[in-house]
Image (cartoon, rainbow, N blue to C red):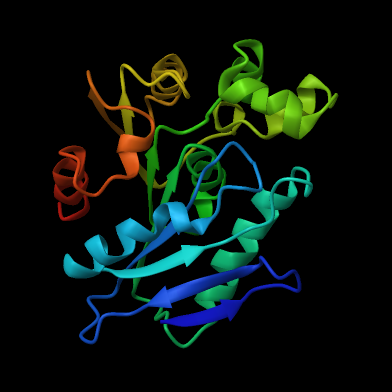
Length: 226
């Protein structure tokens, strides 16, 4: 494993895990946590070994959050991807798959034009909806403060102009932290794009990032399709 800084702040780094016989596929992980400082890349560490064992190379990204207001997390992820592409690890023919959970899914979708594919696990796609429902213990008000609705729309993947990459969304019907309503609205709005949805009746919010959960067999199947 190698730790690489992509900007000046101490949390602007990512960790690179490369297979000895690389298959040219890279999964870049983005953690969630409703923009709160206490949640970090450690949330995604169980996935690192899982994807390595399946033959993928992995990058686990950390970014500024908490007191670092929007759009800093978005800009951090954008810079992290750019920096990774400039390393010796990345070859022009390699495939980059951006995988994010919750707010990490938000960040992955907003950065989809920089990668080949996106996997969004229970993603926050509509910040205004999230605010109106008080989800994540009023996480939007806590993080964004009194910012206007226009800024919340800019932070919402559902208000993006369009999507060009292949996208997989995985979401549980019983998820109480990020309601599946927003995912269904997102898929319906961008039905002209290449978006796959795996919805499960019993898949809690955190179960999405448990590599032992049955949903991961579906994720791996999608990753390995032609």
